[in-house]
Figure 1 (tube, rainbow, N blue to C red):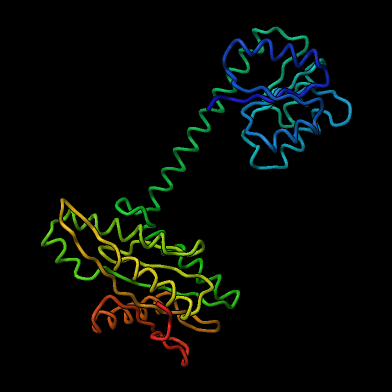
Figure 2: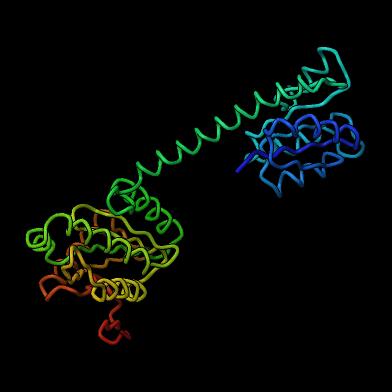
Length: 317
């Protein structure tokens, strides 16, 4: 996608001159125009803009007011603004830069100077955007498990501690689910580690697809996964977990022509409002429930601390 420039000036002639000067350079694919600062700010809100050229003196909302409006919104902080001013003198230039402008051009301007200054600021803006994208990607890499794309254990635990604090503060339930693939070692031993990796990748996708929007899933380690279900009691958690379990059981993994059946065992524990359990307690009790699922035949969900009248067998399949 190309760059977009927003030209704010109450003079149709000046706007046309700016556009005629910049169009042949190919720097911008889109030209937006506004007759005063307020119109320009609305354009800024509703469009993706890479550079602003703004007159200082305009009726209604002038250039300084536009800078003030732009500065009030953090998402516009990195968009450069070049002020077009007919007022010379160091004092006016300093005032313009102090108000938040990136640069200024004195009218009447030469097209060559306009183009040169614009090129510099567009290049800086593009470099900043590239750096932000790289930093974002780097942050994602530090958060995710490289094989499955789920949250890694470190980041999952950060979010767990955050949700734990929120649940305690607002006195709402928080449910944790621990699960792992049944007989995963046999999959690796019989079909090879490539098949094992494919089993983990497929399981991760099925879990993600089965969860609700506000739920979260991470790879805890090896064939173990963890899920956070905010504001969810054991009954609701059982429904979500059993949907995940059924999704994996219904799936068929095919690796090099070989069909591999998968299943998962799951353990659930819930931090109730008023509970004094720590994060470690919640994990420990879920791990115990997972162990009972395996003891009782695997491919099942076990709840650590359900309501006394809750019967998992009565849940619809």
